Image (cartoon, rainbow, N blue to C red; front, side, top):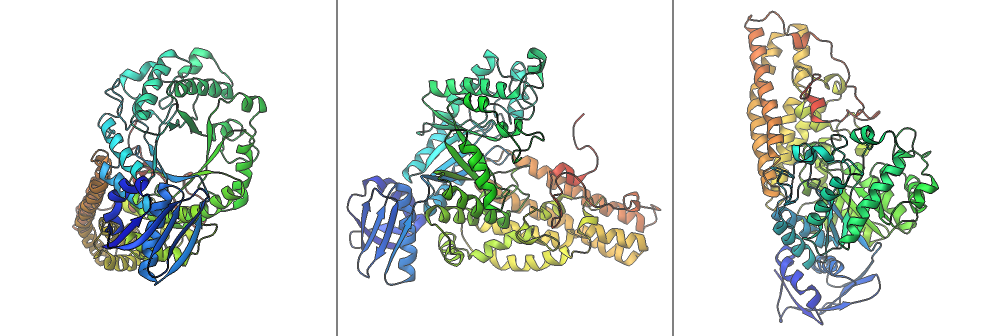
Length: 629
């Protein structure tokens, strides 16, 4: 524990320093190393040590904790130093998805905030579709792990001490399917996931949501969502009002929402995509031909526009879309992303390339606020803290004009206790043979091969000949060495090592079963039968490892969905054993599943060359209907 004697007025950072001292590995002691602390007005930040005494010149609480962390790192590396950074943005933060089943518990959120403080990030948004308490509606967030008002206040207090603004991020139009599925909401529903706009009862409902979501926080800002409302005005609204211009519907609804936020003294921001989708002939957010009529722009109420893009690697594309947004005469906020939502593993290659391009464009175009989204699409299978390499890059680009990746890697190891190259091994779970460099076309190979059925093999023809089984065998050995480390990240590496271990046997088992069956090679069939029996055990052990990391950081609600997937995988492996044994014993004359000629995977998620595909769980496990009418 490094002893420091902080001098000058430290009252602003005192509470935060007490909060995070142990995490930083320091303690305050009058006999410690003298460290002068000065608050400055400009955005140029300094941290120095002359061999006897140190200096930190910071601009805000969040920048102080970043500089203190860097000061400690440099002190441990060298005898003296004098370094500068420059804040590139006024706000730079993270949006955490707590709506796709994985709801961070308070300890999990505090752990993420600790890492954010080390990096100097100063804003955290909680994306909660229905996972916050609204006392007027008991079914809102029922059994979903919703946050209580007390939990939100506790997290807000913790973040505030470290200079991090916590902002509610909710939905006030679409993405409300789980909230609207109950009887209480039947009269305020347009389509299955969109509220019925233009109704007094709807705005009473949304007023309660906005009040409940915002009152636990110090911040007077709120993200009101409103993205991807594709069916706006096409359900019950159309029955009541006929076909209307959807730009007009959007502006009328937004005006009502802004009236509510004004009532509570809130400054709203919203995802911008629906304006551009309505202006596109194809409904594409990134359609270069999309046109938003000037009269529509003139009638948009006062709200900040959040431009979200984590898809492009070309700076010019961000320049074009930022110019389009700035033409709307609204404050523009940029949302990039660290790809925690691709499948069961993070995609660092895509994250790094889009972050570098997006933030470079933001700097050039005068954008003052940026944040990185950590979505959890399709069940929140990926642990949130796997995003740390992407957050390191996002933060460093927020304090430096350019980033030296070698320096970033060294600082990352100081921040996490893990070498950067070890964390990047998680990227290899999806960037397998047959996948292009940096996984730009977002192959979700590990999720595909973990969940796909061994007898049906929907992806077998797609991965055949690429040697993915051998790839996972090598990766499992590399990750095995790392799992001996001891930190708050150990459970994550334990989990991913076991993912690789399972895939080292499961990745090509369907291909091998089909080959042995077609050749009537009974010896090979018996070998694969032995692998299937082993996989039943390994899948169950993986379930337990995944459960351990989930429960460490998340509330228990939502885990049932992922556990059902494991149960399905284990049961289907059991049926594989049952049917192959019956065939080998002569009880069956054929295996109908292996009689089929396997076709390459095909659905809209298969995004071009250099990818094995991606999709939702339901697309990976069956060609039939998993649920529904």
